[in-house]
Image (cartoon, rainbow, N blue to C red):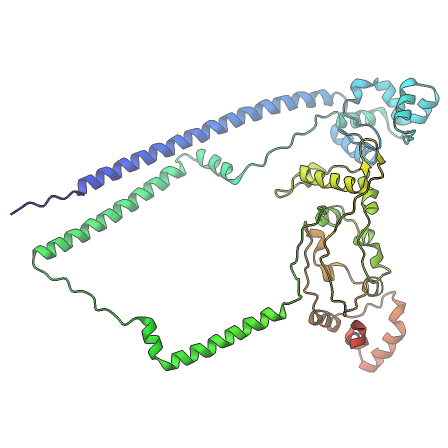
Length: 456
């Protein structure tokens, strides 16, 4: 009998599997050592930078307490000064190297007195900044001034790159003992070996059956399921009816969404974060949208309203930045505002070159629908969040409510009219309360569902 030669023997498969496993393990160990070296280098750089920063902080600690100085600076000085850039007044970082401490005490406590005395440095600063008078702070002691100077003399913090998830994951795996790559390699090797064994066993059994004259029965072919389905008329009828109902339902929902812009979130030409303004800084919505108190429309704030604050705020605080929006991004948007109004932050003056800002409207009712902001905001006492959603949490504003007719009608049916200090509805509220036998009236009970209230 002729001997059969198997090219893919079991020993050869096992040998290839072992070689694959060894190469995969070596690769995983090499990656682990590389990640440990990178972590060690990063630690050395961190130690060096911390050593440098500790030296700088030691220099500023000789002046006073930076923490107390920060509090005093924010309450007394931040309106006109910044530590590292010029504003209404000069940048204060490095001022202790330019001026004598006794001169700084006199200047901060009463700058006008020092100017009147004819001091050359005081007069020069007064003339350089357009004769803008600096307020006197006689209540500050020398110790308080030392604390403020210690704060402004701190080195400018460098922006730190956010550590990615992959790097942190790698760092954790490198310090945990066994590398994740090695574990995955072992599992992969075991899986490949199981597949190889199953293949060899199946092939061996089939060869043994063939050699023994055993006929392996073939499975009978079944009728295709689609053919069985077509031959069953009842199933075809039920499926057709169900399909038509589903198509009708989705068609109805599609056509009912025409003209509804819920979730609409356009990108504005200048990024304006309601999260920072209305949320973190708690600025009242009606400070910017002042016409909502007295007009049908809430109005688009003019850029002069923005400049009420941003004349002195040319950059955001580092803690304001998020993973999606960096400090540099916010500072760049403020620069866009300056370019639009023609403001020169270096000279603290307008250039006269203005550019229009093409804001994109988000909330837009049809022309045949009448809505009066003053009726709701001033008379009704409705909060802006009732219709606009959690505006104080929105980084990019979107339309929260559907603003459909049904949505407005449901609100009128469920909302009671506020009568506390509201003389506008006092007489009609008293009469209708007796008519309906209730103490509180909804907007619908006071005629809020009449067609002419919203359509004209």
